[in-house]
Length: 261
Image 1 (cartoon, helix red, strand yellow):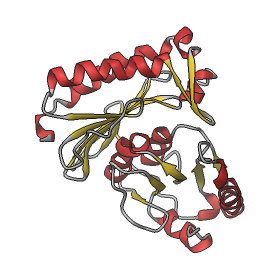
Image 2 (image 1 turned 90 degrees about the vertical axis):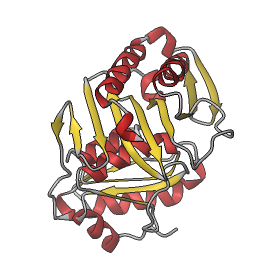
Image 3 (image 1 turned 45 degrees about the vertical axis):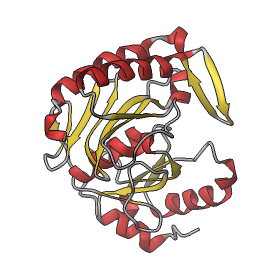
């Protein structure tokens, strides 16, 4: 199925949608869905754009997105998985660290994925079996072998404040055994940065499919590994914890800290 998709045409659609993230007025029209969980007019505009454009081109593919009910979807049929704005809180605060994340899932696997940050012009994409790319150039995970020299991305699971005690205990252990930690607030970019070697690992609990579907393919196609905290492969249409890494650093982290809660 994914061979029917023109990846260049799809990336151009994502670029077009990326212009919507520059709407500062729209990003200040905010509805609160839950604690630390927001949606803006920009989220809805991007979702509306893809909800209209993707069926025009590929009417046989379902559409999963963060800002809609997905109860009607058939998990066994091909589907797009979209996060219209990953990093909505960043967008509200004008941090320039937000992205559109779009993946195609078929047969329980991510077949292609795109992560685009319009604020710095970085477009990451991967097609299963064809490698991972940043702005058209091949990327690869880092070759870092030493945990003490590693840079580790973390996510604080802001919608699940009850996890704070165990989360921050883990973050302290990672800080102690690694070079440093980073918290960017955009899961798709954290995964893209592992894929291109900027980060050596990334951990976060309680992510949704639209947060990670595109990013896990980037990491895998760039030579890295993605698992949940128990070491199981992720199901790209179901919520999951996230442990992405370059390979060697993942093994070092597993030796140094416990991911079993």
